[in-house]
Image (tube, rainbow, N blue to C red; front, side):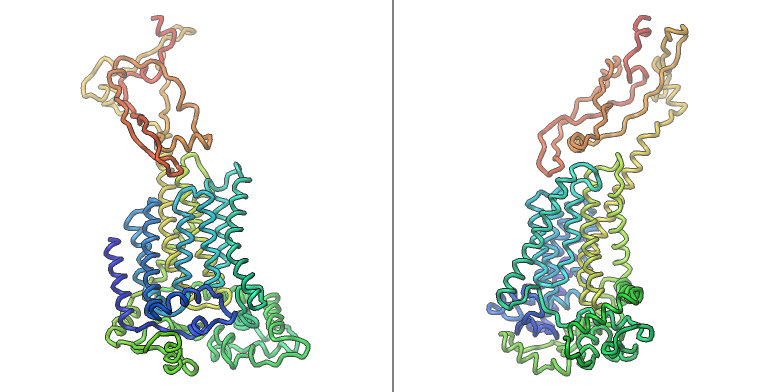
Length: 590
């Protein structure tokens, strides 16, 4: 099944390469081709510098399509290693292979595909083993920290990385917290190392210690769009910064308030004693202090757009048509016309910009008529991810160590998706910023479904092992053979005190123990003494029915191959009750 889905994803990417040659350009592509000049991190520009001299825009687009296929393959291998069913693993990686919005951004000279790839590359070493060692934790944190140099929002990933380091190997236990705290500190330090190195280099080159200079007031757009100007109390020089709802819609929502030249944030005069950055920051802070619920409600309204059944545009958000295939080569007038894009392509060895209409029409029809991941599937994946994360909070004796580690892995992926999407929506909603959901939410859903299923199965097995099986009439009378035998009745024992004979007390069955769990149970101190309690000599019938133990070769919880050892095989139930325990001294005397 995975091979068919993978082949379909490869075919769609070939069509995208043929439809738009050599690649698609966007409004922000100029920042990375001509140089962001500090407005964006330089990580993606490094990739362009490596590939542009070799093959131009076409090679960059082909590499980004290869990134998409690699993400699908790595995600599928990771889920299979985590014992996720194959059908569910295929369903989890299908969005990154078949989603048309993913294909469109892979064909565009933009850093989003590279950012997704670095996130996936950082999660694989963290989740590849059930209990990753310090080298794997350090490698994963370093890669995720380096992803911040591609897109600045990646800095929020330090939260799930450090939480995951605290949870492994067994979450929420009171043992070895000092070791876990050290592991979390190592993960945080490795995550921050690429950031500090990049900011130090930027300070030496530009005199600015930071990832990027986003201009004055990046939070102004969200605050101004959510503000109620009638009740807001601000100084007179900041009053003009509060737009009416009609002006907000006319400008294009939050994106227009930030980038439109007619925005109040760019046209209001600045006081002589201050700067525009301080003016916008003061206004935004006043909105957050006086009307925090309006800001939270606006962020929540934008966040739930991802879970809608259809992909529809709205006047208060960035136009969704920017992320859809067009039948002709897309442009964005008045500033970015065909002439500007052609000149930009010639300056960067890109060649002529061509759109093949028949192939482009096929891709557009595919995208508009269901070629995207539906919102309810994202919602189901998020619910499964949250359920799988919460399944590891309460530990029971029936919950195996491997299932607890699966819950910790689910926590890492789910929390990464939540902080990335919520962090982007806090400033501005754009369908482009929802792209990490294509890879993260389905992975979280698959891991969460497997963790919840393991928890339910463990609970059922524990309940079944605690309830002794009630003997039937035929089994009691005939011993299970269909005819009455000598051992069909339980033997009575002589009570030395009263001189009467009493039936033996039935022995409660022991819960089953899987052989490969024994080393983990020994280390956790959960192996009950009853497992090694000596038994009395079995009867002649029991000795005759003893099976030869089979030899099995299992793996330790760390992944290393364990030496061969006999696998305990339970003999069939004996017909005599005295087979289960040694006879009493009074019975031996008689």
